[in-house]
Length: 163
Image (cartoon, rainbow, N blue to C red; front, side):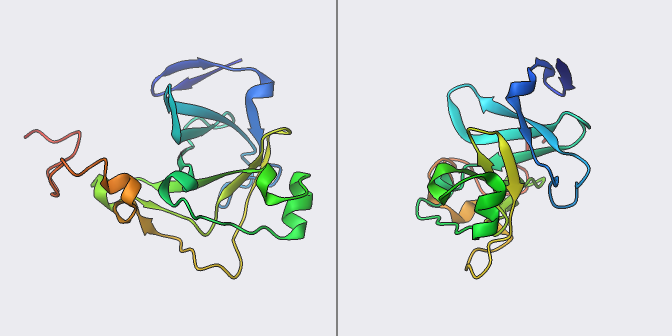
């Protein structure tokens, strides 16, 4: 099978798909996604694209790259839904809201995407009773700020800037 992306045609097999039986928040009818690496040798930032509507895609971060002490706790019902006995069996990703000024990009640590790597089934959860928020600015994470220390802070620093 193939899907057309902004970066060209991507070939995939059904075993490559992530299945979200209930969809994602705001997208309940889109249940099949393809996880694409942005960089061949780095899985800290990924693109998750719907194969049912290729105009729907999410930029995902590995939350442990951003926040090494990230410790999501799933309910027994959420674990059962994924067919997992414990949280350690699962993979976690957080959605990034991309802004024109990349320094204003935020991630949602409160509502991670959780995937069982063996079954490739996933859910999006709301972490109850956690201090994580819905909008953590990327620049607040040391792992990000260390990589952008040489980039001046200003609104003219966009890829589409003519200066």
